[in-house]
Amino acid sequence: MDLLDIPAYFDPIDRIEGAISTFLNADWERAYQTSGVAGLLVELLACISSSNAPTIRVSRYSHWRGIDIERLLRRHGVKVWDRGIAGNDLYFCVKRRQVRWAEYLLLRAGVPVTSALAEPRNRMYTQGYAPGSEPPSHSKRKSKW
Image (tube, rainbow, N blue to C red; front, side, top):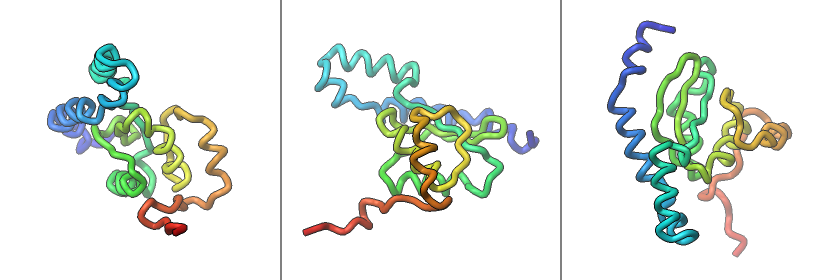
């Protein structure tokens, strides 16, 4: 650990932003549509426990910078919040319904993911692509019409 990392471990602004963003990025509408008020209560408990915001960890000792990872995910519709440093890893949260897609994008681009994968088959799915590749973004896809 570098002594310059110490302030990052005690950054209250990132912790507060992470907690607030977990509530803001919760899937309140889907929770209500599927289970009504009970669904909202379940989503509230998921926010409190952060179980609706999976954490992805990547090695901080690669050529990938945090901002590059965030831009990659943003290009493909994945929002990132609650960023930080933990030992040899960078970490961030994504929406529960986007975690498999985010992992796929990271692995396909060659980002060294160190956390346990929500979808272990993503490693197999990305083996046929050159490191650094990524699927076409929505804005780059051409309409058939």
